[in-house]
Length: 192
Length: 192
DNA sequence: TAAGAACTTGTACTCAGTTCAGCTTTCGGT
DNA sequence: ACCGAAAGCTGAACTGAGTACAAGTTCTTA
Image (tube, rainbow over all chains, first blue to last red; front, side):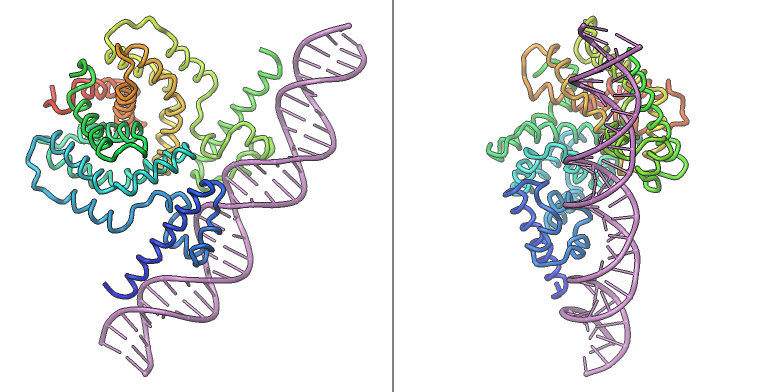
């Protein structure tokens, strides 16, 4: 990794951690991009060359986590039936975020309307994850693929919504697994 | 209904229809709030007293549709099992929007990132719809309630995503019903 | 080590959204 | 019909997000 690339990653992380610190101190609205940039020692312009918006600085994934996440999607060794494999995949993805999720939850506690942005972060994986699902669906039904994807996301989000950042992370993983299992088994049936 | 109230509704509709016309002519980004307000014959300030944001003018529901929607939620006469009743409810809700949905879809075709806003419109019903679900769930499990809600929403959104505004509206309703049925039956099972 | 690519920065701009003080219109009671 | 209160409308002035761009700096590579 060349000097340029290392510097870039370092700058990314400086900006991000500075932003999270300020936001957790003062709240999202009370911190301007100007503040973050100044505190991080870069210009406003540079800030926007790293993050497309003020919201992104709070929710974008670290490039390394992102790479790990993509790696999970390309691992084709899961041979269980679709829904079980998907459940494992989602749990494995969640496992990569033990630092990230609590921070996001705390930001969202203060600014609930940012939920949309947080979901957007997940949505950036939609194409890849959909492709992953389509690969494992016998027929190439697009509607069915999308339904599986959206439902799995809904189950995941439900678990994250219910989880408090002070609870243990394992508890979240259990809930994620439960929600996916319930959704997969069919919500029209009584609880098993 | 007093004069004041009638005028207000009229102004709301003027602003809204003006906005939709301009947006469909030029695209969402190429229309400023200033343009909309001017064309609708009100001030910018007034615009923001009717709509909290530029996005809202494209996605907020007409007060009358909103009232009908709320009425559906309060109709307690459905006595089918939860998931069937919920399926019917969602279909009934969709039935109220034969004008609205095609317009929204066309706006979203041009500005896909507004999906978050569109979802937000649905989210404004979350509390009421969740209460509706909780009322019909035997035990008062919050997690389960949320899961049912989120999954139903996911199924609905899946159907809307798959629908093209040039397709017949009945086709959308069928797809909504199918998606809810599949999700309710359990996506882990093969297609029936 | 020099040419060129990639990155940073300040400046200047557009537009969304808020605040507020002053004006006009509607409403309810008399 | 009239008057005071309340609700609504407006323009002006402000903050802050996001973009465009030209000029300067730092890294890469041959």
